[in-house]
Length: 264
Image (cartoon, rainbow, N blue to C red; front, side, top):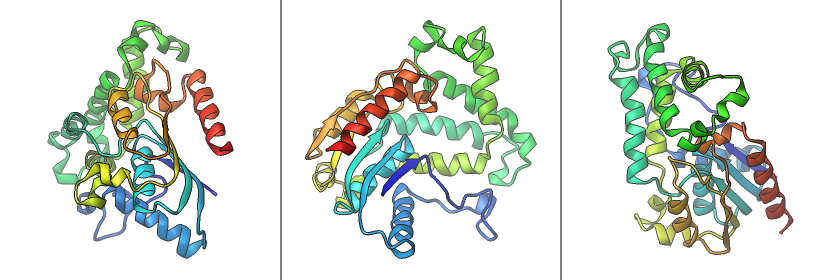
């Protein structure tokens, strides 16, 4: 069986949880909480004893790392894509700016808001993703024109800002807090080398070369701590949001690496 970690997957969130944990009352949760719940579902409900592959991008990559450290005997292979085993200080600070676009809006009201009143704040967050989610090279090459946008401003407003405008602010805050604190070394008293040294799966570490969230070199330094691992960077000028699949060449690379990994 394969487990594909996409963002946070199917879950209870601030916008669909019952009282007393709905909305602004939703508790803080960590990447490890996601993985513990997934493990319980697979083992207790489905009776699964081993996975062939765990793979995921971004926060899904954070979950993939948690899987291979917390349950090292449970899967044979793994492929974290565009994510860290332990979030960096730089990425922590950037993610805080995303959170601040929400929490600083006077309409947020500690998580008890009218959704329509939060649209301007959500679009401001979307604009931060315009700055960091793509690479400068994508804008230089005007790759957005392939999506039907004539100008960078039209793309920024009509694509990315609109993508975030319909999201739930509390869910974004919950996810960002979790993203900031992704850290498999919590399993080993803060020792990242010891945590990654526990990994038994065959691992392909797959960063995106133009990613400005999860930097390729940082991913390589983590990969060097993982036994029986290989470094397989993915090339796309779309940066972190290449995960959206706008670049067929990127998708072909992912397919090729995963097919090779599964064949081992």
